[in-house]
Image (cartoon, rainbow, N blue to C red):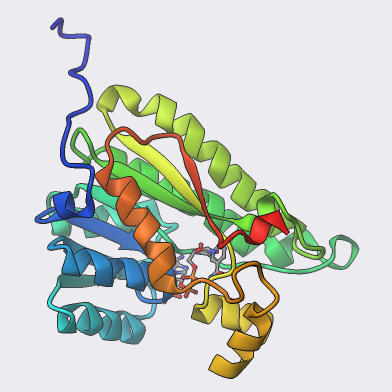
Length: 259
Ligand SMILES: NC(=O)c1ccc[n+]([C@@H]2O[C@H](COP(=O)([O-])OP(=O)(O)OC[C@H]3O[C@@H](n4cnc5c(N)ncnc54)[C@H](OP(=O)(O)O)[C@@H]3O)[C@@H](O)[C@H]2O)c1
């Protein structure tokens, strides 16, 4: 093999069991899908590093993963700040996979909503993914992966969310571009396009106060309910574990995009 030709992507068991002993950083790991991924990874034997801004919520999330028998550490940091991420990753040491579930959803009709009102959500989504990619790409080993978050509204838009929808489109574009760019390093880059998943984010956004309201709101969807955070998170474990998957946007939406 010449010095300029990298070795092929390593082969390993393409099952979550292969994540046993791996270190996974979850940016956005203190709530919802990120926290559920942390719990699943913990039970698969991974070393889980949760990153989020609010320290109290982060500590509770770390306790939750540990209570399930997992190994977890929490770092309070802004996932859109590359210097912050560098500091965290330097402390963590070796990292095998990074999952980005940080990101909010700004709403507002085009003519009523100046750029400043949606700027944080849009910038955070795009440059958050970019910052994590830059910090992680310097550290991940061959076979490592980045997994970003997108949403079903990209293909089935709702009115009053154009900027946020454009931002998830940008993340999907970034996913494919980085899959090509980072392939020589044998790093993989994927995204998950979620449908409505029952998390604090969706409850807040849809104004759902309790389980009964969530059940009622989900009834009209194809499978008769919204997704659980665990169902959504398990897709991330699949993408991390399968070294033949890169540049893929995996739809996990209970068929919501069909109807
Ligand atoms: N739930 C759904 O129905 C749905 C549907 C489509 C797409 N998605 C996407 O899937 C992802 C996960 O959603 P979710 O429902 O699990 O959200 P969530 O429950 O609100 O959790 C978001 C997590 O990200 C963290 N976070 C937000 N901004 C951050 C930042 N700048 N730096 C570090 N951490 C940050 C939050 O903690 P702090 O606020 O303390 O930092 C929290 O831990 C999001 O990108 C969301 O847009 C969700």
